Image (cartoon, rainbow, N blue to C red):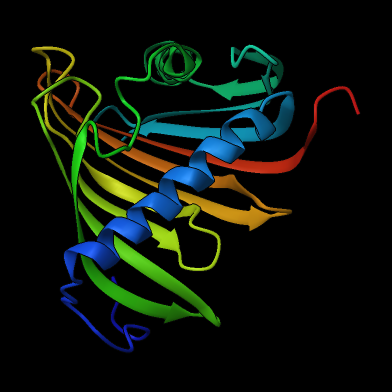
Length: 217
């Protein structure tokens, strides 16, 4: 995935003090934006499909983050297969709505071991790539990568595979999340997930974000 723009220091091994400073910068950045990202609204388009069953559906909605951190949706329109909307899209919305209620899944040193694996340059932006390993096998934690903007300390990309299935019917869940830094915040732009189930096969979901604004404006 890095071929073509990995410029230097692949497999970089930072000294412990340097890595600690970088992690602290990241922690400070996500703490500061935690409050700033409340009362935000963004239009989202969700596309989901189940290739084995030849079914797919789409949904467009307004995603609103309240001052409390709670997430709600205003459905704008929907199309496609009812089962895919119910079993794939609706389950994603429910999981997203519940994600604000726990700090146990936060990408922090309390829950993950961080290892600085590489530094890359991308469009003039210095990116620090951390390898993540969860400290325990828990639903919602994953093994993978965290890309951090070297200037702001904000995440710009997360990817991995969840280490524990939330259901005996699910074999594997992998995902990527991409962010764009705007006005000092890392605003989500796209999320992709693939769920391998034991019954229906593979389910694929993509969420695209646009028109992020302060809610009520």
